Image (cartoon, rainbow, N blue to C red):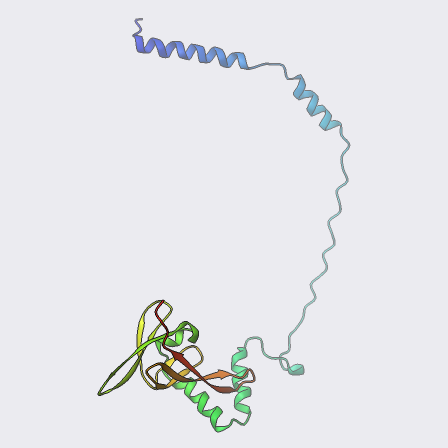
Length: 188
């Protein structure tokens, strides 16, 4: 058998590797056997008994007793029913009708304090306010448009401010009216 130079080198490297691997091994396992015998000689521990499981007590929920509400009926509907039961003033009826019937506008998705007035446009057909939202988009608004999350209806547009009337929840199922405004802000 004839061996080339490249094959010869690989053959020698294989022999050296085999020799080194056989030198690493030892058949003496007395240390391991001693360790296993020590572990097996230890006394066993006591296992705790399984805890007793208490039987589940059945509870039948009766929504009709003691003024309890039906958990499957939305709470908001109940609040609306309570408001309907109360005698509403004309203002409260007007606010409620306005909130339920007006078409939502894009600027109602933003808090009022995140909006900035940046100017006005005016021509023979009317006056519009320019409002910049927190995302940087500029919107054209006019009297009657809604802005902000509190049903803010624009009542007047001046050169330096937009005046609006907000309708906020009074916390007792009714509505309160409050005045607010956006003023022209310097560009940052």
